[in-house]
Image 1 (cartoon, one colour):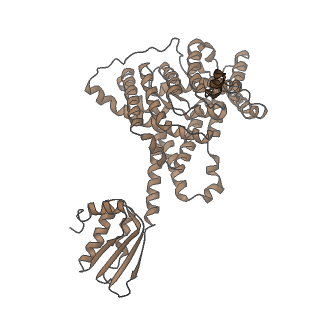
Image 2 (cartoon, one colour):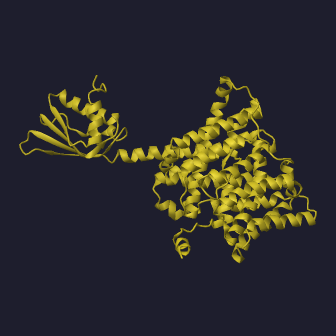
Image 3 (cartoon, one colour):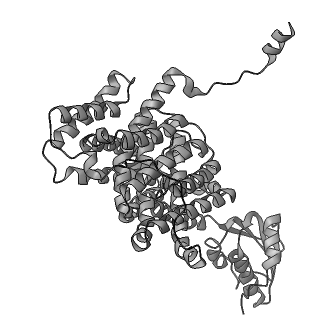
Length: 499
């Protein structure tokens, strides 16, 4: 009897969602589709970085497997990326692979340190308009990356791409039991192989590895000079990788309507880069394109799809390299075109939306998109977008400070009331809103409805006091809130105003 009661009160252990047959099938198939899409991307990014294709392929394997365990955002795909390739390319071409690997390991360590310092919390300062610009720029870059595969190719490539697009658009309307991208890839591969159609294939992109990655240390001199050389590249890897990963994680949060730990994602990316470096990979970060294939096109929601994407990638390129090599690039190009179209926020550019949207929001979005397309670097685009948003916000808030005044009934005192937030932008106009010449000898500045944020605001108040004092008039500043009073009492008269 007691055993029955204890069993009844014993808490049930929740079974992982991916153990459900339906979810398991979805996650497995999604991982396979992503693995197929990762192969040409990893090869292309390796070439961009100036290293052997195997370096990018191994990096994609170790990044995906490690982040599936350590990352904070389930179903997000991390692998070798173009952004990281752009950062490390000068180092690889100038000093060789070993220095690149050392920079990747150091970059991962910096990411772990930034996670400990709470850098992920800065995500809340990224405005929605920057996020929209990030998504739109990314969609354009994904589409643009497919254009070279459609130029100077046999004419049969075009009908193959059209067929693949038709499959991916039409099949989900009939059934979602199997991911449409996987059906398109298998169908086009079967047609081209059995019909002996000569079109570009995955094998044409570069040599696939025939062995497993091995653990080791980069063969470099462990000196201060080496550290000085690789440190700037490592910092670039850390910052660019974190920015793209956290932006992608936020995007997936919105799509799946589920939260994720950005701090865990930050140090998870660092751990993944460290592991990747020790296995001779080129490093990486979250991949928006493959993540959209996983989450939107295939419906994956758990870490299993991310883990299997890495495992399948290794199996495909090492054990089934001959099979993977015959996959027509037309199929993968079609998959990425669908990803680009579904990623782009079409609502953001609709005439009705643009008409209602404040012009500042549109400017920020266009600045993010334009900078990203010009530099081919999403991190630079996001930084420019945030800075643009800050400037527009500062200009907007600067005009929200209002000064009103009344004359005391006895006529001997003028009372000014300041409303708004005083900081470097808004306080510049404050000095000109007082009537120094005609005011009575006593002036009171009521700060009940104002807040002092910085030294510029204290300097403005000092300038007002000095102007009145030069005319033999006294000024009393009253009703400062505690934070404002603290900064005013500390800095008033110490900023050299009027000297």
